[in-house]
Amino acid sequence: MKLTLRVWRQKNADAPGAMATYEVDGISEDMSFLEMLDTLNEELILRGEDPVAFDHDCREGICGACSLVINGDAHGPERTTSCQLHMRSFEDGDTIDVEPWRAAAFPVVRDLVVDRSAFDRIIQAGGYISAPTGSAPEAHATPVPKADADFAFEHAECIGCGACVAACPNGSAMLFTSAKVNHLNVLPQGAPERETRVLDMVRVMDEEGFGGCTLTGECATACPKGIPLPSIAAMNKEWLRANRKAPRRG
Amino acid sequence: MALASRTDRKPSLPRTFWRSTVGKKTVMAVSGLIMIAYLVAHVMGNLKVFFGPGEFNAYGHWLRTMGEPVLHYEWGLWITRVVLLTAVIAHGVSAYQLSRRDIRARPTAYVHKRRHASYATRTMRWGGVIVALFIVWHILDLTTLTVNPNAQAGHPYENVVATFSTWYGNVIYIVAMLAVGLHIRHGFWSAAQTLGVGNASRDRALKALANGLALVLTAGFVSVPVAVMTGVVS
Image (tube, rainbow over all chains, first blue to last red; front, side, top):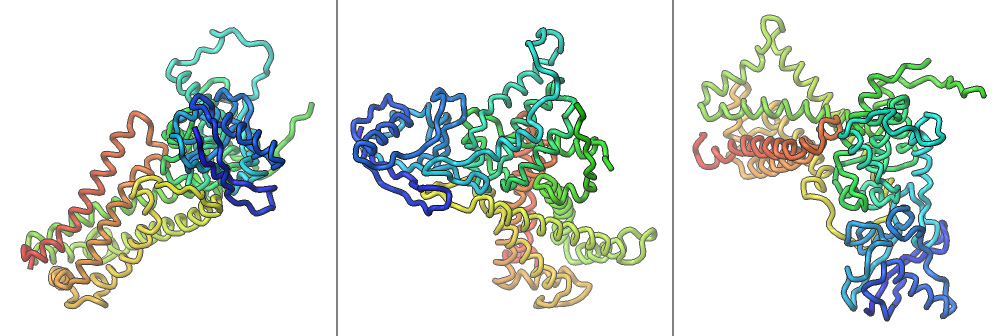
């Protein structure tokens, strides 16, 4: 396959960026999108140019590092991560636009790499349980109803890639935050912090400069892990409940 | 190990709501539902126009005596107006502040554009502005009678017929009612999500209810100018 790539190039956070056009040849349709970018970078290095910086780690769709907006879609045309997207999803001779996640809370570090530490700070605000850890407890010690376990697992699938924020016209982190809140709030292990978790995580989410939710549904469409849109309603329910129940301090 | 003791005071509930994007959405959802409830009552009143001037004008007069003898003359009407004005202001201010925040949260657009979301979803902000401007026009036309071609106080039937006998009266009204319908289509369903009522199994029912409500309200309101135009009501 021969492709024309238009890639966002930006030297650092403060430099202005622009789309740069590259031609790549000899691309196999069995290559992943990231392998195609590797091919481009090998050529750039041989020509003495700076390779395109992009985030990647596991390359098997489970770490949440890769973060490319491909032809306007977070992670591209298939419902998967950029690393699991294969070149067979494109046609020979295509022009492909590659851009970084766009959100005020995710500033561009370089080229296609953005700083997603705002997500880490949301997690730090409540995305944990305070039960002592150690060896795995006996599985039947704490019974969890099947429906709750399924609900928790569905939300635990979130890999924190940020595609939801990238796809949202408001740069909102509601789907990410709701996945984390719902995952822990439904389980008995998460019960001690049930109220403070949702209140603190939503507060930090707002402080980080993410936008509000207008329920366009773009996030759930882009999510490579299929976190469903009703997750947001479930978190709203938890937030309202927590405001009724949380002990008043002071 | 000493546990960190939190000495910060928890902000009051209204403050927590107004500061949070989720809380502000709750304000929008509740005020929106109040306005939808009002529109349901409003459209039922409007449809009395099909029973002639006697019944319609009597209904108009009843709105002033509503709640008597517990309430004084026109108090019921004024209570309704105050509640509605509060809802409109709360809805509008929240929408403005949230929109400003949303636009700031996405300062750079993607170079590769593609169509996002449904038409009703994309037109919520400007549709809301159109509806707000229409409310001003509507009050000047049929409440204060400032711009009404008939302007006969106590004769709402004749005033309605006069408005819908002008081309601009019809155009403004029908465009605004289509905007209201689109706004409710996304707004009602969104309010359910914001209030935490929505879930996967209820989603189809909520969407159907939102579409049904939008359709019935728009059709009900638009039927009046259409009736005047076709001479069914004159």
